[in-house]
Length: 192
Image 1 (cartoon, rainbow, N blue to C red):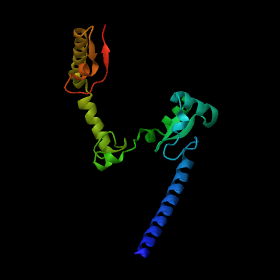
Image 2: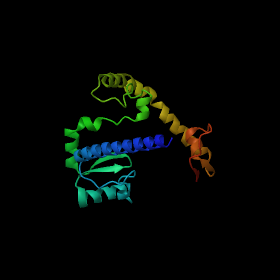
Image 3: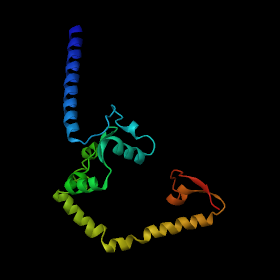
Image 4: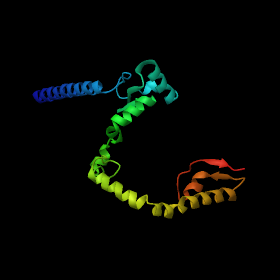
């Protein structure tokens, strides 16, 4: 019994060491390919570097230390921030295929949505090109857009009419927008 416990502990320790070494080598290889950026903390990444207004914090980091292209870890997601027009132009001309690709979430892959959805397929895939052609000819055709044009206009008229009928009262905006139906209450305001 005691020998089994020691074997289990030794196996867990060996697995932990192998996992740690694999993660550190892959992180080093990934870090070499990324642009410079602040050193991330475990789990939360660089979130603490972005205090206050995010655009001001990003501009400060770009101006003071890392230049117009920098890598940030936002939690477990790695983001590359481009903050100058010239660097943006270069990124979109040289790396447009990589920027057009989306990271496929595991839930989409497990449910089988990644292979059939235009959202998750790479733009070089023949299925994506076929789906794009179908959407362009049927969904976004001038006839389809003209047929659906009245729906948002009618909804806006309904909301304005609802507000006009309840002038001077406290109105539930969620009820006006979602037509009641047990929807969650969004906000209450007094119309004058």
